Image (cartoon, rainbow, N blue to C red; front, side, top):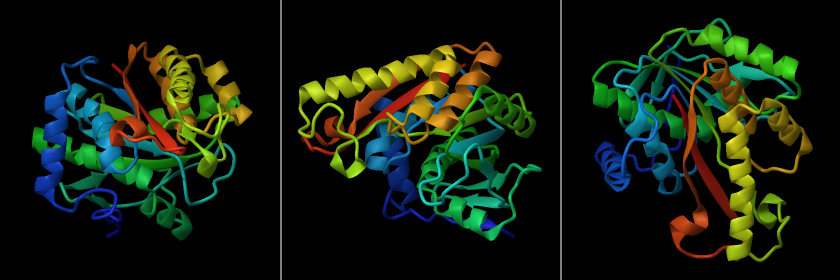
Length: 285
């Protein structure tokens, strides 16, 4: 039996089930109301839980009453994928401190050991698994999970092919498709300083405007402009390829989208740093 272990428990987030539940429950209390009822498609952050819990909790707040299948599409931070290559993990179970999740079997599951390691080592998948496990516990019925890595989509033909692939994997009406993505990574450590190397309110505002422009394109399904952004290399949004796929799928299904949250690590830590990351949560339903 192939099991994806919780590799980042105790470092990126607490190992304690009780502590994890308290984190999400605290975030739920701080969020005012549901904005997208019965979410079907979502873009969510994947930073360490201190930073990402707020953005992730919007899915808990807006999830449908029953979820049976989830596909997570994440960027590959540690393994260099080819252009337009989407690879699927091959596991029987996904472990988290909150619960164990069953696998959603797919014909596209990649049996290569190097791909298995890439999916095992990918925090962008594991952080999403936490919120799925929380949903499974809440509804008290199993959720099957499939996981995929995708770093690039270069043209509309490729986008169409990947959308068809996703549609063949997730066939249950009680399903969620999630793109795991942090937004702009800013600063010298990320080799991205278009608005200056010293971060202040002006820089934060300009990054916000840039990110929300992309968020608006995703919400509207403006895939041609999104493909231009992907190919321009002017952005440091790590999961933009997966988010673009979901944008296309949402438009195909006439889902209505909403950017439900946007914030940065500067706001979360309440201290300025010349290197920071932005987080955006976008839901369609």
